[in-house]
Amino acid sequence: MTKQRNRILLILITLLLGYFFIFRPIFSISSNAKALLTSAKEMKSVFAKNDITLLKTKLNDFSKQYDGFEKSAKSIYWASFIPYVSDFRNGVEAGNYLLKAGVDSIVTIEPYADLIGFKKGGTSFVEKSAEDRLQTAVLTLDKLVQKIDPIAADIEMANSKIAKINPNRYPKKLGKTLIRENIANMKEQFEGTASLFVNAKPLIKKLPEILGSKKEKTYLILYQNDKERRATGGFLTFYAVMKIKGGKITIASSNDIYSLDATINERPKTPTEILTYHKEVNVFYIRDSNLSPDYFESIKLFDSLYQNSGAKVKYDGIIAMDSKILVDMLEIFGDTEVNGVTFSSKEDKRCDCPQAIYTLFDIVDRPVNYFKTNRKGILGDLMYALFYKAIGYSPSKYWGTLMQTMYKNMEEKHILLYFVNNELQKSVEQINFAGRINDHQGDYLHINNVNFAGAKANMFVSEKIESVTKGKSREVTVDFKNPYPHSDCNLERGGLCLNATLRNWIRIYVPKGSKLESFQGSQKKIRNYDDLGKTVFEGYLEVPTQGKATVIVKYTLPSDVSTNSILIQKQPGVTGQEWTVRVDNKKVFEGVLEKDKEIKVK
Image 1 (tube, helix red, strand yellow):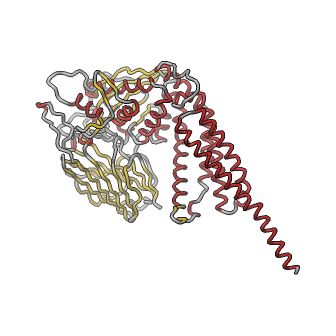
Image 2: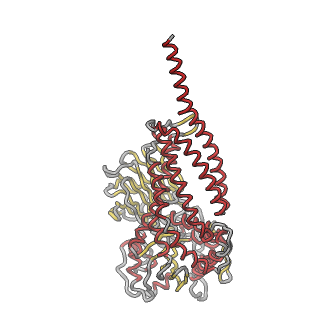
């Protein structure tokens, strides 16, 4: 009887303890989690309204809900010796750090919210003139960046907590729901975002200096025509000298690149690549100087010519951009008229491209029987008109969208940055905005195509790339296809020569020490050498109009290179390039390569 009584007593005590230490806490956690989820959904909808006051209110509500959730969560922290509970605790604590970073960010930007595109009760900033708006924005950046360190510290702490969560502890699936893969993906995405923010901190802190808050800065702006692809994105067609002091921007000069070339009398020796692959060109022009796929190295070549120019100025940096910037700005701000010509982002059936692109080519490249002064100068006039549209509108209407779009374009290498100052240069390299060929501990692949005298054929040619790896052996196939007919390239008839045979110099950058087994499809002698810390396989091919061409390269990776991680670096200026990557019979990536991508093979 005594044993039975003790057994019953033990069961009752166990049930009681289970109720107070397990069931009741879990019920409380579940209840608070539901309330938190509802609050999170409300806050997400507020973000879309772009209202800083409403966002602050909702964030405060969410913060209170999170406090309740965290308080209930702490009731099971005693069981952190259990891995799942430990992961839960790390996740909750990470959320607390992120919430703190979010609150601090809102408090920091609230006084200047209208400068960065948020709606706000006051209208003092909106009432300022266009130039005064930008000047005010630049001069207040100093106050904003002072708060970046504590915010970055909280994000780093959150990242350290998330890093402790082990996805491999969890089942692959529960029913049809993927568990392990989803946890791993969320962890990887957060680590990438946190790393980007922390790495961007040096650049953010330098923004006032870059924008001339204390001392005037001079930048060269280079426009790259990506429809005539070159190593860093496109043919250098136009340049401008921009000065900025305390937020006041002036365009000191702008002209087509041929005018700049005309001011250079003394030139370095013509590179072998131009003599080998370019059509009937034996002089080293500044317009052909972006030969290296590494923007920093191409700027060195550019500068070796620029310093011999009678039009040279001392600059603090060089910013390159391609036609996507132009089209994106037209998409945001609408049709824009310059010199009596209207430019639009809408598709033009004459080229299946934006109307602005065709119109620019029609003005700049179509031969006429009279002299046109500075034909390519209209591009500068258009960019200038769009810039003044940007600062002329209410910031809450367009600035947020504009900044997000320009950030995306820097990520996707449609804008490349170079600074003379070493600290500034390192800050943009750290977040991959400098167009560098990067080092990587694992596997590596970069394919670089250069159009030498093939008209604007890259507007019509599509590319599909497949990389297949088995063990240490790899086969890379690049398919080029141009389904469009040849343009009327008869200059005497005044034809607009956009589509013609693509004359393509191709380089494939792979881990240093890789051994070339075969290179099919090149119409010139294959070259194999080392450059930028990589091994390079080089060839040349032509893609006819209404035709196609294929390159197949087989090589063996070095024995000490792991294929568990492969970095694929996108060529600047490229859009719509389709990739398929297979490793040991497993498809690890398929889609359009929009930016540099590290693929981790599991």
